[in-house]
Length: 113
Length: 114
Image (cartoon, rainbow over all chains, first blue to last red; front, side):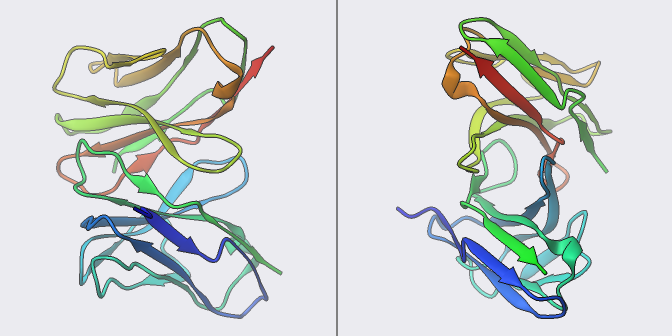
């Protein structure tokens, strides 16, 4: 059971470029989340999804887009990358949003130069 | 919107001693769930303990226990008999039944010294 898989693990992006961070889970979880973690800081919610076809903004959605065409996949798109988007990105999933834990991927360290 | 605050950016404790990490939160909801997550240097997020707001009894998991004070909106984590492997960032997190956003605090970096 792979759990939550994020790719790539590391990436360097030039200012103005675009890229997609991939996230896949094989646990049939309805809820999926994207967070960013800046150095020494907590996790800030970018976008979340409560099921296929449904997405919603979190605290810091500007500069990002998401889609949820299947239960398994929840890619995060960065358009026109900026240095402020240098961060570690975590994808997480949970079967329901209440008393069950969220399962996290290993994170993607993204540097925008 | 709910907020989660961890007022101790860094803490240290001697091996085998006890340490308490603080967390406060703000919500208008009456039914919600609280979590403590551990993030070691490997970056992996690991659930340490969870508490359901409607349960008055404090949750306990081996050396980890919480002091949940609902009226004060406080949710502290006590680590007993600290071990070197407890060195990590610790995050408090909150989610309520009405919303779908799992919200994290800013984290406390804990160093366990030999």
